[in-house]
Length: 189
Image (cartoon, rainbow, N blue to C red):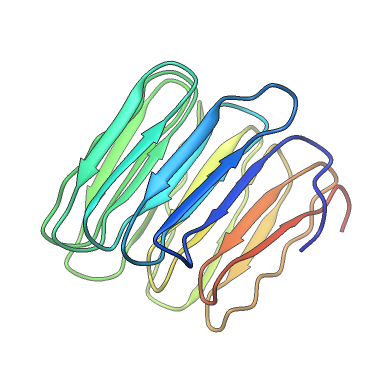
């Protein structure tokens, strides 16, 4: 695990309960789950969590996110409001700085929304390739869980195995749940 140039939070619920406080006087995040769950808090107000089952409560800067799902549930909260979602089947929701995009599919699907430009990924294969001129968020639930946030640069994410490849001239975060937890921040390729 590499150190990040900016404050960030990483939680791995390998045990029933995990609690971690952020550096630089950041808010405290508390999570409870009987099975593995991952949370990533980036330099900006970005919070992401995945709870296979049971109830999960995530406390953010201001609002509170509460969600319960009988099956895989993914929630991504961006700049302003938080997003709440409960679905009987795999569902992805991405909330960007302004627009909100919701997409559900019976197959492993990917979707992403940028503050201005909108991008669509194809999950037909375990390979995702995207480029955005401005901040964008990507959540992929094709398999375990892959999430990345890139300020501007081109990012390439390969989910074929628990391998993540990416290049970025500025800080970027990647969370791979193929195994317990893999995080890296790379200011340069």
